[in-house]
Image (cartoon, rainbow, N blue to C red; front, side):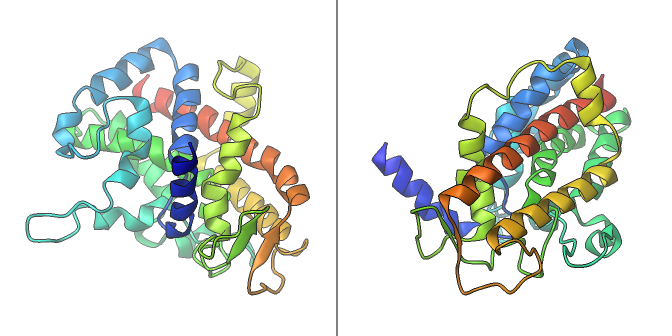
Length: 283
């Protein structure tokens, strides 16, 4: 246990603008979605993921919805025979740098469709189109499952020209390794604490809950995530999301306790909304 904890702490500083929830966050979003899709959609998901061999990524399995939820991160370092990145084209698809200190505007962040919200819409269209090749359908499904989780990590939806908080050095309670940053905190220890709190987020939600949370479009959810990113920055910067950034911010236990339900709600929203999109694409 101690070895795993130390390894996780060491990895905190490795987050990049294209990083995403650690496995626990993505897998939980996927599990919530699977618990809330229709039986027909479940069958379609299983049939598609049974064709994971088409992806030609044996290092990164995608045979279950949990595995598929982290596939898009797993494949980032894969290279071609001549040393080129196999999935470098998708680097910017994991996030959208929408300025939290300016009026909400997706256009600059999503130029040419290179952002997470545009790719979510694209993946749904690919899955709905029966003319899409089997390989592209499997890949679209894996990307969709992952990207909806990414969109609900607030620092993938809002930014202060700091790589989604990656450039903001931060302490998480008593933990203060040199490479901690605000982004990695919202990727790992914060959602892990939030998800672990009872009751379990993985359950079948009522039709009323699903309708309420799933209302709106991906663009609407982007705006909401951008608003939540204000909360994340404000909590780290003493109440002003656009305030001066110190050399190192400190999230004390009181602040962390306030952010736990915020992170928890984003995971819940992500799962319910992913279910809606999967039903639309496959059901």
